Length: 117
Length: 115
Image 1 (cartoon, rainbow over the protein chains, first blue to last red):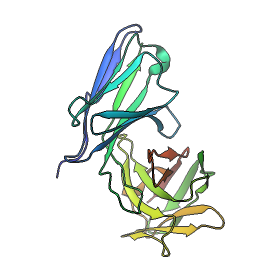
Image 2 (image 1 turned 90 degrees about the vertical axis):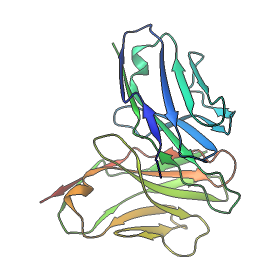
Image 3 (image 1 turned 45 degrees about the vertical axis):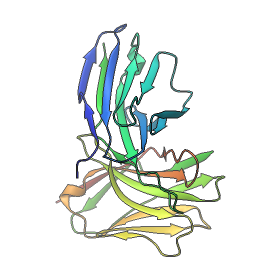
């Protein structure tokens, strides 16, 4: 059973450049989440998808950020015109949305560490 | 709105001893789940244990147990017989059972196991 994978694992870019990250969730997980984690903090929610539909975006997700999940499988997160404040770990998680009474567990990928110079 | 408070920035524990990591929460959701994740220096968030708000019994997973006290809004993680490999950051998180189920995390506790 393959876990959540993310690519690249590390990305160094210059301010003003565009970057794109990819997340491949666990097979058949229909929910996919993106979080951002800065140094010394816990992850913060950015956005999530149920299948191919993007259902919610955080206020943290400025207009420079866009996320897609075109076929309800993998997802991409693009940051345009990167700023130094975008430097962080970007984490992807997936969960098997069920109709039960329990909150579904999210399983995380290894993250993409972005450094903007 | 949901909030997690972890008041222990760092803890040092002797190997083979038990350790309790504190977590208190606040939520307006009637049904919710509480989670603990471990984050080693590699950065990946590893799921450890889950407790549903309506679960009558405290959750256990191997050496991990969750001391859930609903009236006090606390969900402490207990690690028995600590091992060197337990050294990591530990995050408590909460999510509503319905709707977006997004996780809200605390600031974490850095646990160091001393040989």
